[in-house]
Image 1: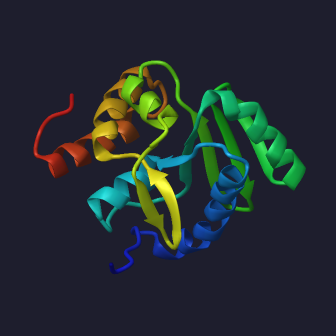
Image 2: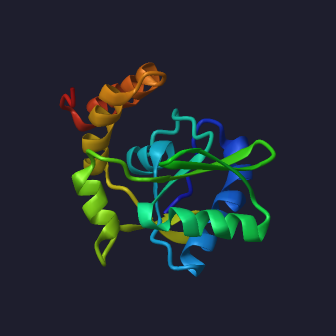
Length: 169
């Protein structure tokens, strides 16, 4: 399969090795991990007009403390921005590690199941990638809860609606 890249190809290419480093850290330490966010959306729609500025990862909530300990041990810069979110940085490169909050029943069940999310190719690294059907669950909940990102989430919802050919909101 031909490798495709998002609109901001050069910046994204710089992000790939850093994201792989964080994903490999999770896998090596038996932390279930899956990619979601803008890269997952891009991965499934293959829309090269989408920008991917960071990589968003999901881990189980029970693994949050373990993840923080591993980041500290490896000397990876991070900030815990909320109970659900850890942002790691290497210069301008950013990987956000989130755990699933309330209201995402199907996503939570999939992450915790023994089979996990379907495995996809993240530029040579096999990793779980959230399915589009899970975005159908996630986006409306995130939109309703959001205070700061409503416009950005709505843009993603409209893009996904166009791709799927049906309304989500």
